[in-house]
Length: 61
Image: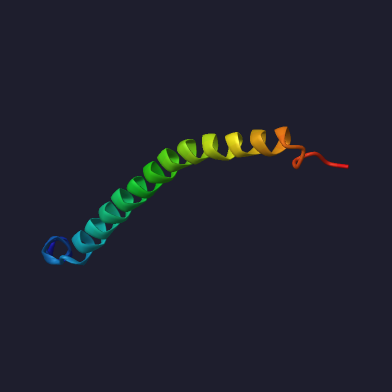
């Protein structure tokens, strides 16, 4: 029973859980940002590629 009380009184596990939650939120924000920027810049690069091919610069020999 004393080991159980000792486990409940220690706060190392709570700190680890807090860091894990913060890491998860940071990763979620990064993934969301990359997804939003990826779709925006994907259209930009596609337009540039079309323009270059229209000018005759994007064709393979």
